[in-house]
Length: 630
Image 1: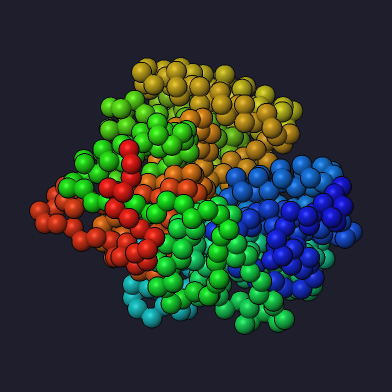
Image 2 (image 1 turned 180 degrees about the vertical axis):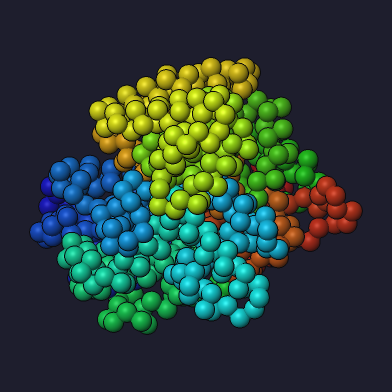
């Protein structure tokens, strides 16, 4: 283990103060590129050096990738066995662990409950909304908001002031009943039910307060109401909590991030100390100062004294092009300039935009110029049909109440069980609440409720599920997934479905087997899959294309931001949040920052107005593209 000198030696005075501040509540305002992750890791090392038990440390992150990175960095610098005892994870992964331990206290679920993804919940909502005046997306957003605000269906109904609100609350209630009947929860329920457990059962709260005496929260500016409530409940007894955040990078209001509540935490938490990490180690002085001149226009923010000791660097370069085609060509010419004249690799360059539609003209020009590129946050691996099919089988084998999984797999492979038959089975299940789907199917078979041919096909399916349920624990996860794929002849299913895509899709299924190798219990494998938010492949030497939201937490030597018209950013969105988004994009750049916009865009007959944030950059830090020597 490192000694105290080794832990503190490479830190600046601000960082040392944060690292040595262990007992009590702390609110650490961390500017972009300020070495926050290094500081967070060093603080954990310092805690262990001071004999704090690793089992008593709980560290929250917002992405699986960030959690894994922090785990690796801690393990590299201290005893690996001690690092493994620290609980590090996303809010959802930590809460799922708590929920699995204490779910019986709620009296709602049975063992092996399923976590529904967006496809599963959409199927339920589509059915519910078929007889409602409220559209599916509206009710989906409503339910998510209610859960984030920790409101049950009963509380939502009580708070309803209009007939529309009343109808939404009733749909919310029906939706939750279906989830419970299916022995399932949705993604929002993971936090919702965990907070309810802590609020409702003092014994559980006391146990967790004793287990986790030191709480660390990374990227707290992205916290929602339920996240904040969870942090307060977990730290209630010992009040040893450290929140790292940058309010200027709070860009997820549309996902429930509540900046007002976050900024009010120091005033509500007794004896909380505000600390600062102001030194930027990432960007040049011109980029830091130019970005700061923009974000200073926001009123809803904590004042900071950000600075860097890096070189002055090249000015931020701004250019206007006639249309999107010319703007795309300009961006690609800049990539060539950076690679050929400045010696950068393609992987040192990122092109950012406000929304995905803006990437299409770029892709065409990149391909024409044989420039390798990758789009971050494309179609996620676990969103692919073939992956969902296999996982749905495993889910249903583990949980016979999972109605969405049942409907997905009943005809994979094709069994000839028609929609009418499936609807009748669904109706029978609805009439026998508390009885799982397989038992209902067995009763249907015993009572000969369908024709002989249909009953035979249904029995074949039921027998397979029952047999699989009996033996699933006899196999390692990767062995069972392999066995499943072979027994349902899924290779033939893919070949019949689309011969042209068969090879790639079957390779995806085999990749799922490889992923299962890392698990001992198949239940842990399925739970982990439900928590994975994206599986972007690692980039070798390619230009990165991504949205401004997708670039958060990343950095490149050169950043090119396109499409900067006022109709795009801020558009009709919250101006202060959009300014923060622009600030995030600017501060991803280490050495070179280029901004551009097209004056004319497709389907627009008049000249577009420039993004107002460009004129907020102090003129001493920005130049025209003509100043570049090519």
